[in-house]
Image (cartoon, rainbow, N blue to C red; front, side, top):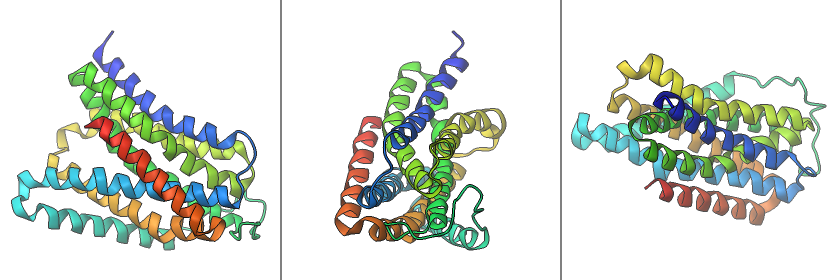
Amino acid sequence: MDPFWIALALTAFAGLATVLGGVLAVVGKEPSGRGLGAALGLAAGVMIAVSFLEMLPVAVEGLAGAVGGAATALAVGALAVGAAGYVLLERAVPVPAAGVPDDVDGPDGLSRLRLMRLGMVTALAIGLHNVPEGFVTFAGALQDPSVGVALAVAMAVHNVPEGIAVAVPVRRATGSRRKAFAWTAFTGLAEPVGALVGWLLLAPFLTPALVAVVFAAVAGVMITVSLDALLPAARAAGGRAATLAGVLLGVAAMAISLDLLG
C-alpha cells in the first residue's frame, strides 16, 4: 500500500478518537451539575497539561536552533500573543444563538448561551491544536510506518478526553446529541485536514522556528480558554471538588498519553 495512504489513515485514526470521545459524551443521560463541572474541569486540565507539558517545550526546542538563548523568551512572547488574540476575538465575535432553546439558567447556574460559547471556544482551541498535531503524525508515518503507528495511538489516547470536553457543554446548551457530535467531529477532522494542508501546501514554507512559534501561540490560546472560561464555569456548575477532580483527571490523562509519545 502507498505510504501516503498509510500515513493519512493513521492520522485519520488519531482524529477519529476525538469523535469517539464525543460519542461517549452524548450517549446516556445528560450530566448532572457535578458531572458538567467535572467535564469542564477535565477540558481545562487537558488543555493546560498539553500546553505546558508538550507545546511549550516543543516550541522552545524548535526555537533554540534559530535564536539560541532567547528561545524561551520568544516562546513566552508567542504564548502571550496567542492569549491576547483569544481575548480580543472572544470579545469581538458573538456566539450565534441558533439551536439554543433559550438563554436561561439551568440547575447548574449556567446559561445555555454561555455553555454554547464554552463548547465552541473549546472546539476551536482544540481544533487549532490538532492541526499541527496531525501534520506531525502524518510526517512521522511517512518516514517510518512503525513510528507513525506509535504516534497515532498516543495521539488517539489523549484525543478521547478532548472529544468529551467539546461535546458535553454543547449538548447541555442545546439539548441536542446531534449538534454535540457535529462539533466534536469538526474538531476531530482538524487532524487529517491539518496533515493534508501541511503536506500539500505549507511544507515548503514551514521551518522549525515557525512551527515552534505556532505551537507557543496555540498554547497561549488554550491556557487562556482554560483559565478565563472553563474553570470559572466548572466551579459554578459543579463546585470546587468536582472541578478539581476533573482537572486532575485531565492532567493525568495527558501526562500518560504524552509519556507514550516519548
